[in-house]
Length: 122
Length: 107
Image 1: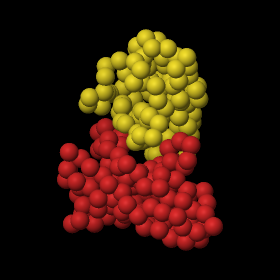
Image 2: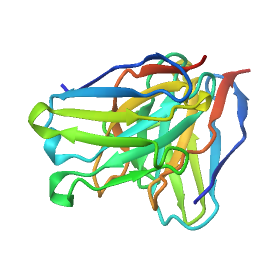
Image 3: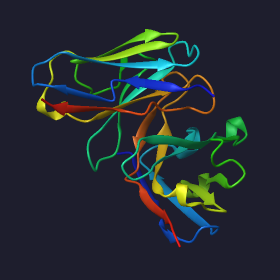
């Protein structure tokens, strides 16, 4: 059974940093691209970014709203995905979901974690 | 960036109704469109990929169509479990934007 479990959320002041983690199990983590999606309270889904697999040089892509502030990384030996968030703004307050990209043929997010809440407030 | 616009934002319907949600892209995305269902307090569920292919386990009352810039999600006969918010997402080019969502509510 595929499982994605996020951790690391919490309350942080504007300008602060936070690192989210996602522990993956039930599939060959190293084969898949992984992505982060967020959802502000009462709002819609917002794509945050992606990290490709080793075969694709672990390349990353980011939404403009987070580029230069957020960094996605992974450790295939630990089946783990990370989101380093720096220079946090109040508008970054959201539930952050770790997701698995289904693949180049199907192109969707087929598994989602339960999410971790990040609150940016003074 | 490609903008995704869903309509309507809210849709009122009854059990047994046939409903259609539209998703429009600001430029052509071929058929690289996914649909998701999200119930209150729950994680989004992947429904459809490549505009019209059903993800495994998704009931056949769900269907998708379209290509280029205009897409639809149709539920042929609404069931109580279908009242939720639906999102489209384009996977043609970075950033892989979502539509704003369509909330399907009981009439």
